[in-house]
Image (cartoon, rainbow, N blue to C red; front, side, top):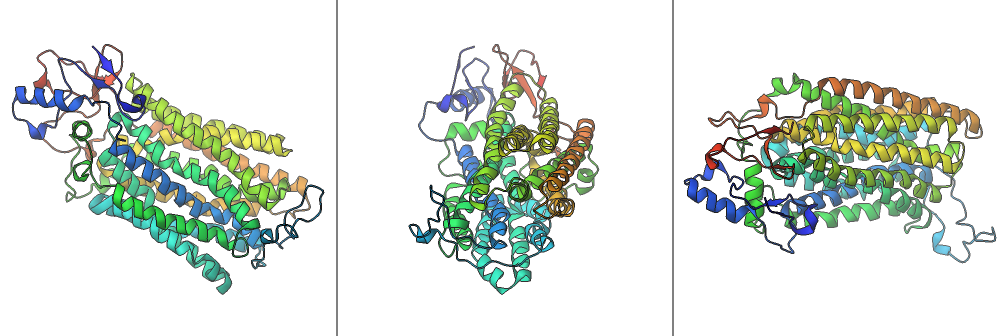
Length: 547
């Protein structure tokens, strides 16, 4: 069977097939076998076209949205060090003398605050108090109404509120805590809303790629936010650290304008999508119900082992992830005595490795799945390796990370392998219930936000020795890393037992036609093509389960 790759080398699109047995079109458009065959032959084979697929425009805009979302979330992790430190006299010149005379604009003059460790923990955790409240409502609203507008408004309002950070900090510690909590409330809808959109746009064998592209923006947000925040705290306008919140807040508002014009709720509502891409998406999601008025099967969702398998993996992974996300700058400052400007750069290095693994492994996972690897095996494998290996390197870092090089090496390896989970439980919502993916993400991310609240408190409570007692601090941080590893192991065990890879019965439409979405044909190249209804083929169909 002749096969040709589509534009961009096949990475952004599936293979196009030319055969006497063409892939199906939507069953709802059935007008006879002959017409079906003509439609399939016309729509299924994409011509070489310089146009970027519309579904990947969604993923890329989601990517940039999550870059901003995570920049707005983690900039406080670095900025709080500058906000509570006595400002120095600027960077040092090569000869060791102060260079502020030559670079007068690079002297931080913004006010600092005498906050205790407990108050700093409140500032870091306040965001998550608001964040946890809107996960489930956000997923429901995105599923019921509009994922596009829920996601866009969430990013835009959070960005606008970030512009008020300096005013709130000047008004008082309590006002800043309240502001951060409100920011968390609006940002809390973003992940469920994006999953709701992906459920309408992502074909089954592209879910890992599209999910990792969109959600991978969170890792790039970390990579960019840490060094930029560190530099702005030292050399930014408005006296230093206030510029952090002005820059990232304005970026989110600018992004929102592009989001409104480039992204659409469904493939059917997109005015510029090609007919071939529309047909490709429709026939691969043809069994997914578009009835948004149907009641949500809440009881079946909360009693589904598949949902609990995702939830346990999500919670366990987020404990280690949020511990590093919110506390890595403090760890580098306390234990390794790294100054604020360099701190931001060093904190970004491990997340750069995580982003690399995230994007590459999403593509690799879908490639394995298209060539026969069961979906449930792929998800469980990614979850297990993506948590056990990071746990191992965190423990090694706790014992042997006595220098900056060793500490960054172990932290980078931990987060590098941690990037595998993005093609694990984060994509699994779409596997078991594409129609309710936004709601499922809201449920699991609500529980997975608890580590974001408890993690900073536990780390600050354990690693509380004076900064002069470096040896004691290092031993205390080792305990923090061991706790994270133990939680990783528990999550892996529970996920291996409970996780599933196929669409669950409560997530299927009760139609007369009970075709299974995950069944596929095996081609003469050993890879899968979308399901073909029996009506289009006279020969018996061989089905190979993708789940």
